[in-house]
Image 1 (cartoon, rainbow over the protein chains, first blue to last red):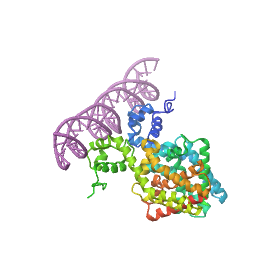
Image 2: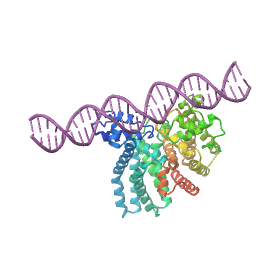
Image 3: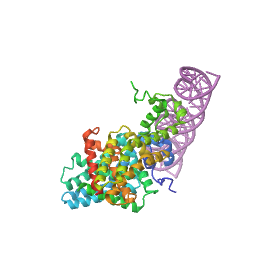
Length: 215
Length: 215
DNA sequence: CGCAGTCAAACAATCGTTTGATTGAGTGCA
DNA sequence: TGCACTCAATCAAACGATTGTTTGACTGCG
């Protein structure tokens, strides 16, 4: 039962999407072979052409699936922040900023798709395709905008100014580096993986640094 | 004159190394074909086997070349900091931290190898090979250690504590994100590339945030 | 001659895609 | 109920193109 990827019971289409995400998340489009995907997914090779009209169609569908997935995962928190922002004081904004960062750290370091997502997104940064449009519009921009509105309110400045945009980007970088530079920091700490305590310590450290940066 | 990569005049071996860095810096090992490298380098395909004993040998030699290159580029500043650290006060340490960050930002955003280097390093983070050992030992660790000693002195704490290691990693992340997340921030700013003023603004912003984080 | 270096040509293996056959559940009609 | 037909879905097999590597001949300098 379960298969290697625990996607045995899903439909062929879903199995292909989930398997493709694991593959495209860690290696280039050209490096991932269609045969590898279908073997891991346990489906016939013609299924790619049949369901997605070829490898490229599968890739784009995978990126769209990923973007939608992350968006839905962040939506509750982002919506709550947007609502409370209507009549929130600076203290409350600081508190929400804290919440946002902590959620980001925990999702990024403990979430199941994070490693795959970060890999795929990095590759799209270097060679943007149509997939980058999905990812940017569906969750990068909304997240950056929410972040910017919080910090704009806290610092009494225009949330769409270049300074705020750069600042939010930097703060996100503080967090993302723990996935993108995972091997470096793990080797530096002499560990094989992050413990629950490590993640908590990272979250607190990044939160503290971020709050200092905006105050 | 000069060929596509401006490496016409070098030896076959050097042409292969420089071309391979451009290729391996932006695509996976498997995605880069030997024929593409030799075509861009303007050499015969057998040269890879002859000079590097195959594709893998060329890849490892490329990583070693890159590590050595970055090391030599950073060496003067790191050595100067190490020397002055022997009898430096906190103010001087703050000043040197500022120097280190500014140098990092400018090298990372304006340096010629940076885009290649960041790509190759990211791929090694996800799938570490022998190449990661070169990169880590030759410049990541020395840089992190110097950074940690500065911050340790400033904060009166053990430079080899987990807290300082995490903090330096975060601070580096603030800078690296501008290469790794280049397309995101450029799209957010509505630009095609960073101007000289943008880089200066980023350097100042990151410097300010870093100094706040350690004070 | 001897040898380092370069060259075109060929090798088996793998690439993405296409093909035609087969399966099996659903439908209409007698 | 029983038979014929449709169509989405899956399958093994084969296509030409490209992969990394090897081979043997060729060049030019010492």
